[in-house]
Amino acid sequence: MRIVIAEDSTILRQGLVELLTFRGHEVVAAVKDADALRAAVTGHEPDVSIVDIRMPPSHTDEGLRAAIALRGELPGCAILLFSQYVETKYASQLLADRAGGVGYLLKDRVAEVSDFLDALRRVADGETVLDPEVVSQLFSATRQTDALSGLTPREREVLGLMAEGRSNSAIAAKLFLSAGSVEKYVTSIFGKLGLPPSEGDNRRVLAVLRYLDS
Image (cartoon, rainbow, N blue to C red; front, side, top):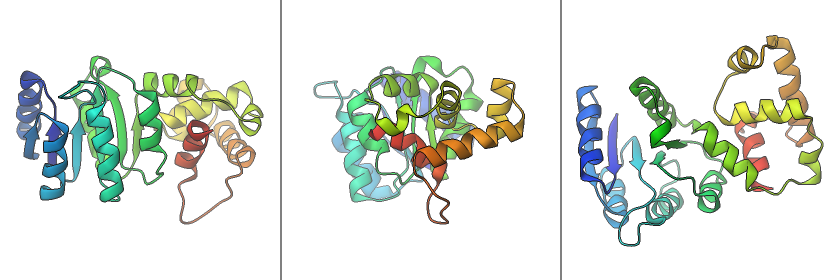
C-alpha cells in the first residue's frame, strides 16, 4: 500500500515508517501537522492515511478535523485515526458520511502488529474498523432514539460487535451463539432500524451509523 503518516511524535512517526517499510509498504509522506497532512494526501493520493488526532498548534483535534475536511474534498479517501484519545464529537461526524474506509484505533490498546496491519488493510479496502473502546464511548455519548430503544440487550450487544467490524461467525463465537441465531439478531436489528435490503448500501455499517447519528 501507499501510505501517508501524520504524527507529531518524531519517535512514533519514524517507528511507523520503519515498520511499514519493513512490511513492504511505501510511505509516500510522513508529516507532523494537519496542514502538511492535507497537502500530502491531496498531492500523493495514498491508499490510506494514518492520522493522529492531537497535533500542532493546539494539540487538541487538528488531525481529526483535517481528516473530516479531506473526506469532504476527496470522497473515498481512506483514513485510519490512531490516537491515545477518544474524541466523540468529531469522530461521529467522520463516521456519518457512510462511505466506509475509516478506522479509529487507540495506540495503547493495539497488542499485536498483525492486528494493526490488518486494520490498516481493511480501511484501505473501504471497511469501517473501530476499537471496542471507541465504540463504547461513542455509544455512551449518543442519545438513544425511540427506534433504538426497541433493540433488546442482546441485539445491542450484537450491534456493538458489528461496530467492531466482526463477522457473523466471529460474533457467534464471541457470544457462544449459533450462526443462525446471530443471523436472526442481525436481521431483527435491520428491521427495527428501518434498513431494508439494498444492493447499493452496506446495512451493517448503516446500522452502526444510525445508532451513532441518533
